[in-house]
Image (cartoon, rainbow, N blue to C red; front, side, top):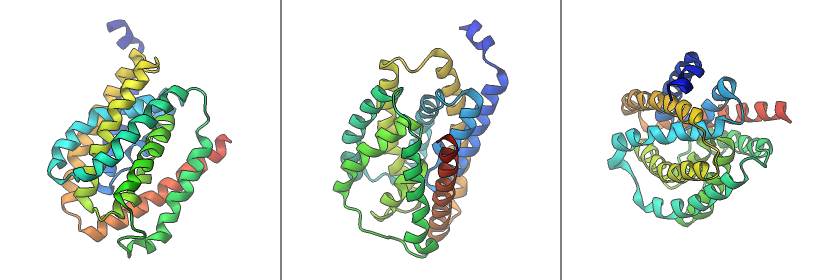
Length: 253
């Protein structure tokens, strides 16, 4: 184990810790996007193929801290619709992880995120469509499948949560609870199919520890925001994330 630690550049671990902290401060105050923000940084540090499992592992390690911070705000009625189908999507995606190109998927997701600016009229509208709870069944499968393949979908789920009427802490809390159960399936499936090596576990822990610090700092900022400020920031993050996803994946293609 000590030899493995010696072989890992210290600056990689420090870089992942700082990236996790900064991205999860932003993620907490804007309702998500931590994983998406981490994709380019993590890919540059440890390689594109290693980024998805490391990001998902780091996210999973950080989620208990966010669950603790936001426990009383969770809408458990949405969990039962989202989680079962999401777990199925996660295991199927882990099986196909090494065989698919996720660039086209991210292009479509990027276009959807940019469209939310117009759907919500630049933050002036609270809901752009009615989202039934039953809709979280197919949504859970699709988003878990894609995020397991590419390392994260950022704030793509936010419009659906917003259109159920969730706001601020309620949105962050419910999304985190769903992500925690999906994370259990992701780590289990990555391990089962031999994707997670010892090096990737170490990278994931460095990222996760930084994300925990980011969660704590971000919650303090979130408490001082009103609902409209939160919604505008959420939409801004979705739009920027969409542009980044499209630019990155057009270059790959």
